[in-house]
Image (cartoon, rainbow, N blue to C red; front, side, top):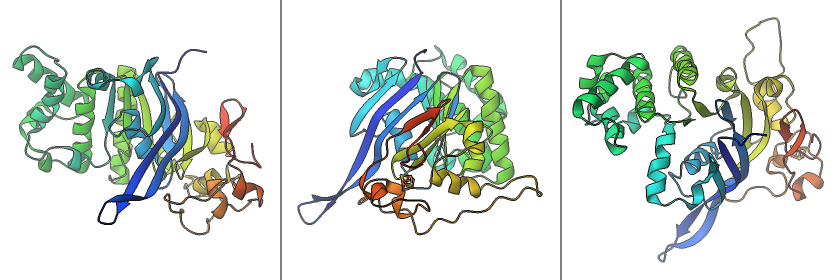
Length: 324
Ligand code: SF4
């Protein structure tokens, strides 16, 4: 088997909670709890789960925008965890991120041209200001904007246009992998489809690989080659996209899927309503994290033993004592 472009093994990220006069550690948020996944060159891995499940933290740890607590990250066979600042800067040419809120991630005091050119300057792309300007124009046109937009400021654009600016900035350095961190969650449904179509076109044109993070399964259905479902910091199921949508194995995936609207009004799907809220990640349930809400749990097995992520065949992995 060929090496994946990205390999993540047993990734852990805990955030300390401090309190008292001495700011001692009083608790720990277990945001990412031994996550392992691979992403092959040219594919899109959709990563889905409710807010607080650790999907965005996983994406940011992969780029080392936040420091993982433990685990391994390999990109093109290179050990990302052991990289120093210089090596990381070089890596960021290959790995980029698009954020959920394009307005918050674009400096309001800089023109769009300056925002995109900044990435070129940092990575020494384009020898002269003219070359950099030409590249900015090319990037704006690539994402469906116009050359004269470079003189405007982020507040002069709609949400969808701002996301296009974020995409142009990510593309500026010719990356191989882009972590798309809920890139359409803040946009209207009609605009969501346009941005997803643009990302698909760009993937084909520039042979890009995506990790596409979203909180609902309907968004990632068409863009993903495979989908990983996360719950309370853990991956509970990974499968090729079609397989996951037609044959979900984990009860949590089934519940998420039951909320996805079906375009054909003749087809009825029964909505599975989960009891209670997502438990607090400071003190997650023992055994299977999902056991407090699982409609098919078996006690005491599910509350005492953590289910391993096991392959059931054809690249379909699930973490459940009863469905593995
Ligand atoms: Fe439900 Fe038990 Fe499977 Fe967890 S391991 S999903 S609690 S049946």
